[in-house]
Length: 276
Length: 270
Image (cartoon, rainbow over all chains, first blue to last red; front, side, top):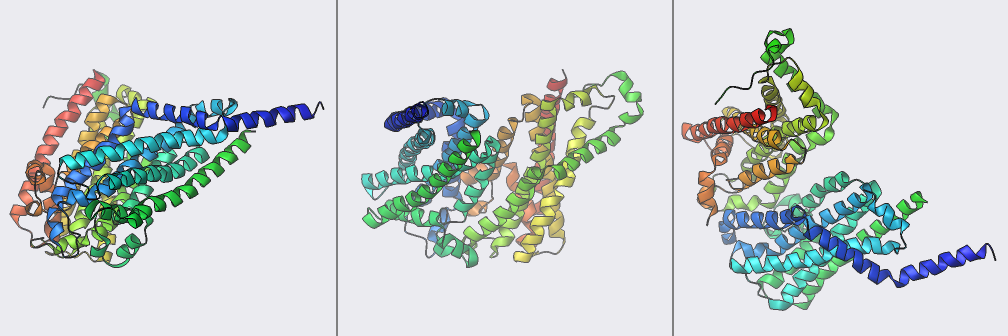
């Protein structure tokens, strides 16, 4: 009995942690959102740079819409809207992973582990906070683009899909950056991973139609999952709402996010094992 | 432009205090640091290589637009990628100075019996050498991928002059920022300044094919003329009209940003 008592206590604590998981995740997500909101240097670049690039491309590639094979668009901005949303939330998601690494660097992560917080809540909270910001970012981009004449033909349902896609992309990138952050415990390493994500985005049809590319680059763009979801979202923006496009835009990043979050969970388990 | 603050009087008489000698020593140290920190080389070489692949791959059809100066996307984007590498080369030396300022090494340099102008000249010399990394590697990849000089080897000379000039200007901009902020986090501001200037130019398309607000900004942006000079030997016969605005832009940049760096340095040593 003397041996069984601590085991029973541990089991009870574990059950209590699971019961309180949503509340704990919510609290940590709230912390993540508040901490990001209080540091404009964290989220301003993820708003300004994609908008700047879109504004520059809108002017620089204005005549590209005349090329045979370019989709019929009101302006390049309309074509770029889904890519800008993805680019913006990717920036933000990287800073989410970077924050997690900072939590490890400054000891907050260790304090969380020492406290009676359900382990998944640490990860879920951080990712959920980023996802909320990603959805807000999508809405802000849609509004700004609308002001400059790029409207979403698919209407409010298409905007909802853009928001859902933004959430999934945040989870997808947040999962991989969290995995790197937990594995290395170094903010610098997470930041160094950013160019790789940026490269994936460039090697897709995000900024130019794959049909107008040549050779191996076209092959890469056509087989890049980012192209699949951005092209689907783009059809919602340019041509109107369609359930199959909506599904592709959300399910593709959703499936990848399952993999990346599983990777982050695995890294977290390993770190916890090392900490024992 | 006012003179640099004088170092302590023994400095001028010190045997090791010769301006060029110390500057060469500091430049060599900066270049050795490059070999010791692979992360410092990656942006200078890897990013321009990525850009030449990504831009000439993704935007290859842009050259099909009527009025585009060349039908070869590599010819258009290779000089642009090299200019990005030059920017990284110039900015890179500033990141090293910021590191020295943070860890106290720079204080020791300021205390040393050296001519203080060497503290600016040294990093600039390092930038001049460091530019050769992207020029050589990106050119090699570009020519293998199909880039062609349209007016003989002179095209490489104008490209090299443009890259060297831009690296120096970027370096002076960065030094001015670093001397004022004195921390490594100044790197973000340095990069933002450079990349915004690069984007608001003729990186992707020539001015005549741009629409809206960008061509007006690009015309006012001195970097536009430097990039035009860099591209001169890849889009047709090189004319003096392609080259002189770039040279003037580099000259003005060196004077203005040289003053910016010097005033920052004076604040630092005050």
